[in-house]
Amino acid sequence: MQFKYETDRLRLEILPQEQGWAVCRFYKDNKDFLEPFEPKRPENFYTSEFHSVNLACEHRGFLNLSHIRYWLFPRNKPTNSVPIGSICFNSIQRGAFQKCAVGYKLSQASCHQGYMLEALSYLLPIILEDLKLHRIEAFVQPDNASSVQLLTRLGFREEGYLCSYAEINGEWKDHLLFSYVNSISQ
Image (cartoon, rainbow, N blue to C red; front, side, top):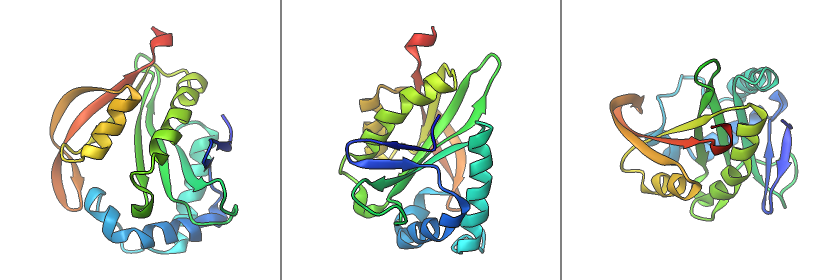
């Protein structure tokens, strides 16, 4: 597993804590767009300090392969620019499960340009192979048609409806469960 990958149009990077300012800027620039789809934020969420500490935790999670978040950048942008999104592989379980969950987000300006399809198409085989996983799960609100379409294009299967699954922006929301099963591990 590497700290940085490149696709045709993107750089996918594990960020050091010094880039907390860039992550903070991403969230500030997309606050109105992202907040309706995410958990309520702590008071200090929109500070560089918060994101620097969070990036340090994510770096440790990457090193012990327990939590992996790649930040997305256009390949033609400088290294110290603001990301356009992220992909996170979390809730990594071993033993009889050998699975994780995936979550992702893009800036409003970067939606509907195929960036997430490109990034996930690239990362999914790496995560499955390097972590020796059998299954990746994704949880999506039923009215998020773009995400449902993305997961379907990637080969995820819808497996169930989860009532009041997660508290999103202060309200308990239903979610659909999608899974991608590693056919090589069977």
